[in-house]
Structures are given as C-alpha cells and as structure tokens.
Length: 506
Image 1 (cartoon, rainbow, N blue to C red):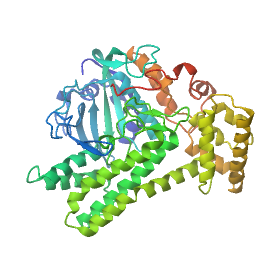
Image 2: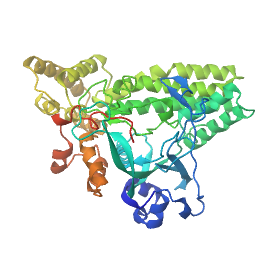
Image 3: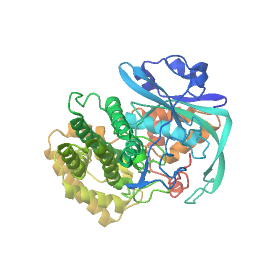
C-alpha cells in the first residue's frame, strides 16, 4: 500500500502478544503490515498466501458464480496471510485484509476502504471486551495517497441501495486468529472428495480437518483417540462453540448481517465484520445489510447457525464413510443442534434477566412489550440491571411515550419480574450479575460514521476515543461520555443510508 499512515492499534492485543507499543508506528513494522513484504525478516517469508473455499448460500451449494464454473474460484479475494507463529505459547495467524489482488479476487482490486476497516477494527475491539470470541486486529494503517471508488450513500440519503460512487482512502488491517479456517473451506475439500476430483482428494480433506483440530481444538480433542472418534468430538465441540457464540450475539444485540458458511469460522468465533450491525431500537427482524433479508436477521441467527453446522457435518461425512458407528454419532450431534441452541438461548435470557430459572412466559411478554413500545435494546436491559421498583427508569429506553394502558402493561410485567428476582436471594449480587451480562454501551452506527469520516481527513482522535469507550463496555461511563455514547438514536438517523442500513461495499 502506498504511503502508509498509522490509524490505530490494539493496545490489549499488543500486550497479550508481548509486543512493544512503539512498534505500531515504527517505519519497518508499518511497511510490513501495510503489505510491503520485502522488509520481512526470518522466520517470515517475503510472500503471503490466500486460501480458497466453497460457496453455499442458505445451505445450497453454488458453483455458478465461480469463474471456472466448478467452485474452485471462490476464496480470499483480498485477505493475504503473511505470518503464523507462537507468542507466549499461543499460536496465531496474521492476515492482511486489503492486501491486494489474490487468485480469488474475481476481477476485484483486492483493496479495502478505510470506512469498513475502521468499522471492523472497532467492532473487534468491542466484541473482545464483551467477552465474545472474535478475530482481532493488530494494526490499522491507511494510505495517504491511494484511493479506490466504491458505491455508497450520498449525504442525507434515504436510499435503500447506494446512490453514488465515492472515492475512499484504502486501508490495511492485520487480522489475527488461531486460524482463519472457515466452514466453507472444509466444504471445498469435501466436495472434491465426494466427486473424486483427484486421487488425493480424501487425504486432503483429512489433512485440513486435522489442521483445524490442531489449530483450534488442540487442548480439547484427545489425539490418542481413533480418528473417527476425533471427528465426532470435533463436531460436538464446534456445535457447543457455535450455539454459545450465537446466544452471545443476541445477548449484546449483534447481527452478523451475512452468515453463510464462508463467513462462519470453523473455530467457533466471530469472523468477517462486513454488513454487521447492533440492534438499537429492538426489532427481532433487525437486519442492517440490504442484501440479507430475513434469513440472517437478528433473531434468525440461530437458524442460520444451524444451516452452517449442517454444512460442517456434511463436510465431515466422507471421512467416516467406512465407520457406521461414528456416522451415527455424527448424525446424532447434527440432529441435536436445535435443542442445544434452544438450551443455550434459555440460559442466556435467564442470565440477562437476573433469574434463577427460565420463564418463557415472562420473556415472551417482555419481548412483545419491547416491540410495541419501541425500546432501545441495550438501554432497557441496563436499566433493568438496577432492578428498579418503578417504570420511570425504564422509560429512558423508550423511543415513544406510551399510553396509560401500555404503561399499565409495563408496570404489571415489572411487578411479576421483580417478584421472581426478589425471591432469588441477594438482590445486590443479582444486579451485579446482570450488569456483567448487559453492557452499558453498544455500537451505534451514527456515532461510528463520524469517526471514520474524520479518519479519512487524517484525524484519528474519534477512533481512539471510541476504542477507549469500547474497552470497558460493562463499566459505568463518566457523565461526559455517557451523555455522548449512552443515548437513544436521534430521529434523523432512522432510515438513513449508510447508518441504519448499508450494502456490502467495502
């Protein structure tokens, strides 16, 4: 990338890896992690690698959009891995997002714009601080001279789709994870094995599954087990991680936007922050991505996760073709996803409401009231965490004043809920526990947009301020910051293109 300039780095991640913070603005370090691999030093090599994966949409296998018409042309179109190694005994892979064209770019320029790079960097910082498994970003650099054009939204646009071409500074972030293996990558090797693409196709499927176990499940899968038993255990572990991940997404209001199997990390963490968003005014069908529809909306994410898990299990089946007992166990694990997901959601709602046992009627009545009253998802649950004895504190989360009848319904619900909470024991401990489940701040796109707009002009102060606010999302904000970040979405941002909804343009 031409003329790289520092935007931000993850202080928490630098500390975890044992890196000096001065490296982030060191010239050689900046050149390396803005794509100039000529400065790479051993054990790094002066080249990177991009990986292919299969495309499945809503659980249907696709090859038509592949330039080769055989499914081998999909993959990392602008993500180039450049390093894999151990820091403090933990193995990490580093990947440049926006690092340039790859064999899978399908005519694209291989670049990522600053807008989407700032969004991903800050989202990863927030999700990590929320305790939700996620890829991370080590550094974020932008070019002072290089720009690319992307479709986006004009000022004050109310258009559903982008309505103007915008020139954007290019940027490169260094993503980091134990591996970047996706469910779609396992699918690619499984399709080749099923179709007998070449004599070593089944062997290669086994190799990539073993690589997944080694990189993401090493401490949990007993390597002395028979291979078939290891595969079944892998499916069980991934199912557990996936249901916990999606339940946590819903807990904090996160909507992935696009959650096909190529956007689903086989390690069970959040990956690919593209057209994502966080629910502000509660709507079970919240979907920020203009191309997502209901398939990947807020409350449909468990169903999308189940589809991805089905594709994961389908990819493992060729490895067990001569092991009927293991196949039966795999099918049982696959068939039990819905029950496991429901159980995890019940645990999440119980924790979020400060209860000791799940009460489906109490939850259903609350969700109905939240929709009818138009409440802010984050503010409401944070106010509930103080266990109020009147409706007044909850009204801080209301986007519209309610009728006397609606207030009476809320008061009745509040009484029923408090009765259960008060019977549970120490109210102070319940409140503290709820505050560990219900963050005080959330992602609000109308506050993020000014940060990346300022960054485009060379001012990174807002990016750093938001990064700091996101570092302690369960804590109490100082009054000055609370007045800015803990408030309802202003009316002018409802239906605003690029804020309330957006395309995949990045």
